[in-house]
Structures are given as C-alpha cells and as structure tokens.
Image 1 (tube, rainbow, N blue to C red):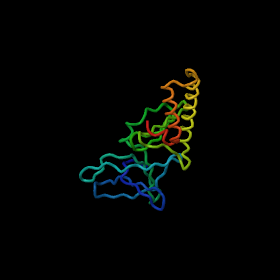
Image 2: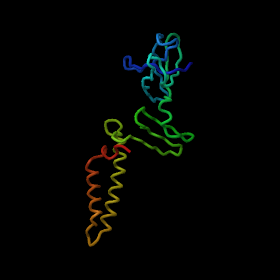
Image 3: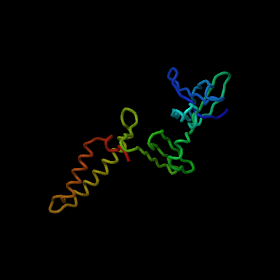
Image 4: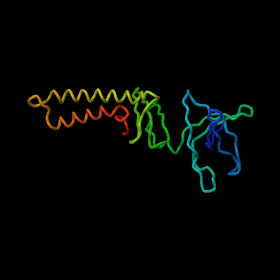
Length: 184
C-alpha cells in the first residue's frame, strides 16, 4: 500500500475509479483504480490543484494498492478542506462536502449538528426526511410561541407586536419545511 494525491476520478460502468498521481513528472501516467470506501461511506474527491505546467500541487490524499495488475484505491481527506472543519471530540465524526463549509457533525456525546450554508437546502432522499424532521421541530416551537402570545393578551386581543409576530409565524409555517431550514 502506498499514498499519493488524487490525479483524476471517473465512473466506469457505474463504478467510481480514482487515478493516483503519476510518478515521473507531467508526462507520466497511471492506471485508475476501483475506489474502495470505508464503512459504506462513498465520496468523490475534487480535482487537484495544478500549476501552470499542469503538475499537481495540492489535492485529496489517496491510498492505493495492487492486487496482481489491478489497482485499488481509497480516497482519504483533502488538506485543502481539512482546516475548515470543526474540531472533533475524541470519538466524534464529521461528514463533509467540499463546498462552502457544509458538514454534518456527530459529537462524542451523541448530538448531531448539520451545517448548511445560506441559500442551500438540506434534504435527504425523495421525502426530504431531514427537512421534515427539522421543520416539524420548528413548527412545534412556533405553535408553542403562538400559544404563549395568544394567552398573554390585553383585553382578549394580542398586543400589536405580538400580532405581527403571530402573522410571521403563520407565514413561515405556510412556506413549507424546506424553506424553513435553508441556510444558517
């Protein structure tokens, strides 16, 4: 087993292949290897940074090995992205994408933090499962606030500021679950 930088990625018959950085300069080439993924988590690295001559300067780390003439590869972390990730507790885990600081963080105490950049939408699968889960929690909070404000009124009518707030809650709820969890 050896390590290098990812040179390129592609799909061949629906299977991700990753090419190790060639040894021997810009004219050298290397075979792409079938990507292996730890614990069923799959990720596809971004293309490497290159200089004016096309030589790779920075990119994702790649572990690769041979089985006979077949190259196998396992993409690992990307130093271009690592410094932007949250600090992990011992036993913690983070899943991230190489885009504007988006990640899901499992802390050692069992809590989960999902960070979605402003203007983006968090969703899982066709049912928007994550969006619905977070939206339902938000709707429950809105309902609780609405009850408190409606209960604390003057002469049976909510205060003017409270009325504006109640109308805002109704508008947010009507917008739907995906709208409610966009951005941070």
